[in-house]
Length: 577
Image (cartoon, rainbow, N blue to C red; front, side, top):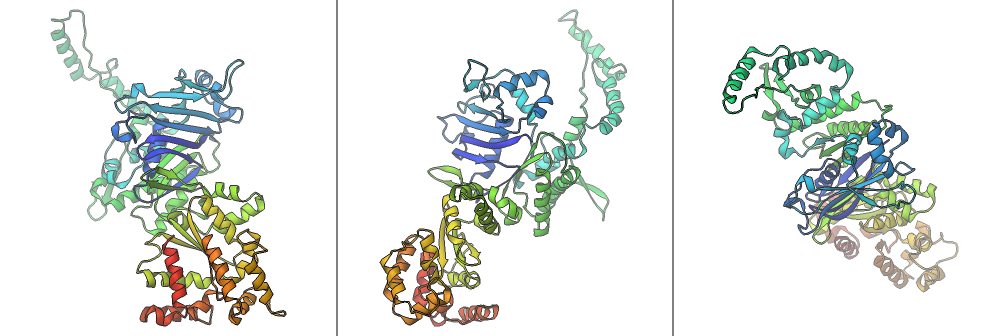
């Protein structure tokens, strides 16, 4: 299916220079003012350009340029074009169906007329080279044929204007036209007669023009002939076609208590957003997931979850997902983990902005996994482990950890020491059932550019740390610990074996040295074996965790936590990420 594979954006608003990979269902995740809407606006601009002003240029002395990479330009898609359109685009289509083009505007003072279009010659004729070709004849119209005007649902600050007014750029008009399909034969047949009747009465060449128009023409012709003999005036009132009529559509709401129709603009943002998303939902139901369409229409939505309760958010997410599985490509900006399903985490773009680099997109989970892990089976397993971590996408810092006790108690301990919650400081917790998967996930998140740390039990150092090259097998402190391990006791790389060594107190120096080495690599090791020892709790169940939390609420930190200095040091280490 024809769709955008990625875009490269240069000098557009906050986007100094970045690449954005795209899939059929592409969430953009980032904090307020990170540049998510700018990315969507750049995508719209490269397909349906308009003149940019100074505010659209990151640096007014440099040009704005957006490059689009298109995939799926198959023979079936080309066959759907007219002969002239096909002739214009074929030299730029690769054997694999790829097509690449870019637009640029040289300066802020430019008009739409000086926006340049270039296409990359992927299938050169004999004697030609692969190169960028300036202003290919007729290609702009071909691009707009392949990518019709996107459906856009904007942020809610313009909702009243967007949803309540009759104009062909409104969300409501677009959605009504898309759902009803004014080009369908069942619609055009019913409208053809009344539209033709209007044209007969209002057009300059109508067969049954209104008498008032004929009178106006006669009087105007008489007056103008005094200045320009031989001219005849014909008043022409254009009649919209079916597409224009539906594009101007809007919604009226009838309050059943009064039966009075109301403009949607008179309602609250929650109601307005609900109506927009209800139409998106209805469009999804109308669109078959088994469509034979070869092209994808673009849907761009800014924060679809706004003002909706969680169940409604899930309904919207599913509707957009359904659209992306038919003949639509969905790109949306969101602040809600509920808008991202488990299967979509690997393909989500995390958007961040800095003063120096402007808006940037982190490497996606799927690319980071492929870069870190070569084995396909291991890639699938690791992706599965990460698919419960949508909270990672909404955080700046990540703490990986093993054990349920950490998951239950670390948030309480952190808040008790710092006075802030983990969420306030943008720290996400990701738990694992055991420590074996932690190093690979650490490397993946690090490759994505995330600030990541890990929290592990003591036994981790004697097997997993060595297997993952965090410690050397021949490290003298590892060897010393093994020498002090008692024969007959559980092995050191088992939880009870490592705890047994710590309890005996014969390797305190070695364990502390290893702890420092691991800490420098982003791993905090519980030197007494596991978290329970440091907290002074015996159980690993809900009852023990609840009792500890109650004690922590009512008493000073030092009076509740057994190793208060060590646990406080852990929290400070996390806070210093």
